[in-house]
Figure 1: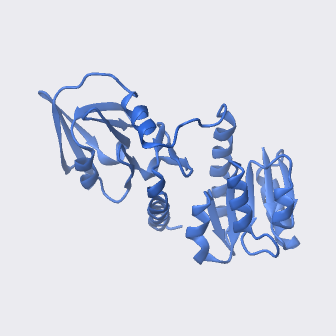
Figure 2: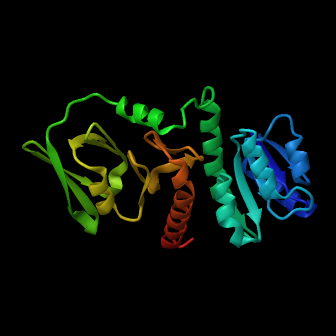
Figure 3: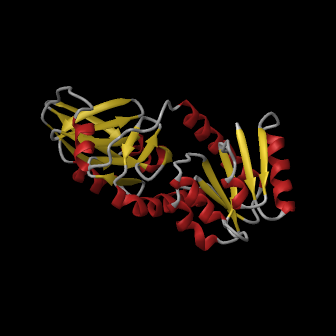
Length: 273
């Protein structure tokens, strides 16, 4: 794994390099004093710590140019400018760290980025999905061909006050905790719930489930509803969960970034971080 650090301040570059070396002593670490050096790099890092405010080509412009080239590296912005957060996520940033930050927070973000970088390296070839709605329709309609009984869904309180979904399929009722749903998709008038314990399929409307699901869920595409607790990575076209990939409509991207950021902040506050 190759980890890059781009900051116009030598002390910050060296401080980050020292901390990262402690965590990953065997990995290659490259230092850059500005965006120009990053853009001239022949072999891009898997993870790039990128300062936003730099002379010349700043961090935001550097990230935009990298994305325009199709570079899929994990970008972690390191900045004192917390008001730039939304713009940072617009260029597909993996995370941002606001100076000063705790060593524990750095390592937490770095570990998750390393996991994402490893997943990126396992992907064979580019994503050839057509961007048009017609092709997206073909993708989700062709995903599964199993049969399901006529069913319905309703919401009730489960154990510990957690919301549960009751799915009725013929004469069988199945209770599913909402937070066990990784994502849901709809095709041929059927809703498929991908859960931690397996898949459940029933006839119904995704809009009904969306109204019941709560703020932890987001509708990134008319055919999908995703639980943000299980998101591993995303880009402008798709969201990857622990169970599989979900389409992200282009017009929904900015709304998703804001919702996901709000969710992450709320989760960190709940955990006392």
